[in-house]
Length: 386
Image (cartoon, rainbow, N blue to C red; front, side, top):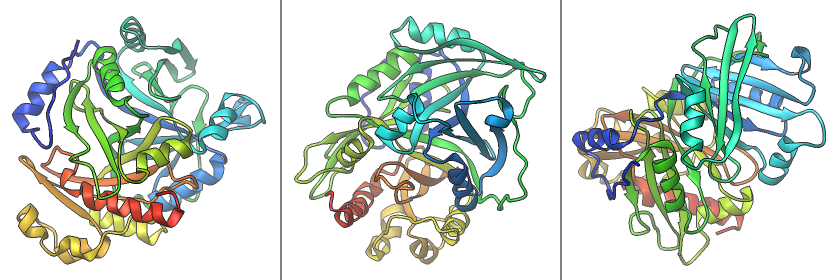
């Protein structure tokens, strides 16, 4: 099985990353993230929000008009990112139970594979709990094979084999025609997705990704790395063999007050996806467009920028522009990155988005953690949950 690497801080040099990726046993080759499905209370209205605020485009639809009687799904796309928003059409069933317990949140992280049957067999024989047996779904455009397993909480991974399909999305979906398609804002692909798990569960799920899915650990952060005067957490980052799929796993750590992870677990009702990090080639343009469209971001104090260049070295961007937008910067051995985090985009203080632009850096912004978590604590203080 893939050996779990104990790397701390930013010891992920280019050589180190290549070595780690080679250590990940590629019995489960993943071609990329296929789509992310969220169960939501009102898919039509949620789709309008993601189109308006995030620049997603109408892509596909399934519901009563396509023969579905129990649910409706709106599919949105921006470059390589596909979001599926699903709402039940009745008062009972598993989707309702999920929404009642968790609120709006990620149910499915679908992974693009060459062979969904083999992916299911390889993972289940290593201990994964089956969610969906390999299933062939067909229409006049060809066929797709999907299978799936459970991971932390009620989150699932679906393996999607689509090499024999030429339709708009999946069989059973039709093209979603809409005259309302605001301009994209420059989002390119999913950089990583972060899962929050319960007390002392981080290593359990890191072991799951190592042994069941052949991932390797590339970074480890302790509560010494990720803490403020009041709260703390621990995190490890797992990556598949080619580095296209990265899943940081967070767990709470003891602190004086309730951490953001504890708050998430309380309001989400257990483990789940905390945030989706989406990549852009121009974070200033992307964040500016998002602000203009009503997206709220965490506040970064102006003092953060006082000694920025001394801390991170020379950068291409104008510091005053970054300061204006509250964009965070961090550097590792390979380069630097720029990042910014939205406030929760749902009513419960659970799921949010990260916007990230990598300029060589392969890390996750450890130098920004203190500023980031102090910003989150200010929001918790406002909510009365700190």
